Amino acid sequence: MSANDPFARLPEAASFTVTSTTVADGAAWPPAQHSSGLPGGKDLSPQLSWSSAPHGTRSYAVTVYDPDAPTGSGFWHWAVADIPATVTGLPEGAGDYDGSHLPEGAYQLPNDARAARYIGAAPPAGHGPHRYFVVVHALDVESIGVPADATPAVLGFTMAGHTLGRAVLTATAETPA
Image (cartoon, rainbow, N blue to C red; front, side, top):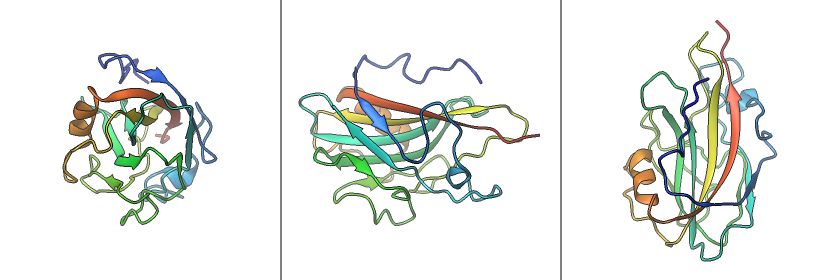
């Protein structure tokens, strides 16, 4: 694992709580959250619940990012924008192809595989453990205003000036050599 901190150059934000029945903070992803190209992988997005968001939160975004991918820029596995402020969780599998389990108004942006859905962990064989930052971003706007075909990096850039808080859960994965 590298020491790459994906928040090091972002504005400070309040912390709040995110939990998951799918994976504990610091634990390895279960097989279903791995890429369908790996044994047992199902590209199934994790269940998430969050609480204690900062006052003034008007919407949320959820991202899953691997800063340890050997790309020079990491790898975005999932990005969801415009989750209403009244929502405090997503069910397992919400990141499927049609997003039918997302709350009304929320939408998925294309990940780094250019698919608007969750794509599971798939570190290169023998590359060592990778970290997956599952982040719920509390925002001060009802709509972040990025097009549905924007990249997660554009979403992140746009959110930088609107982020009130971040709730972070880190999962891991490793593919043996």
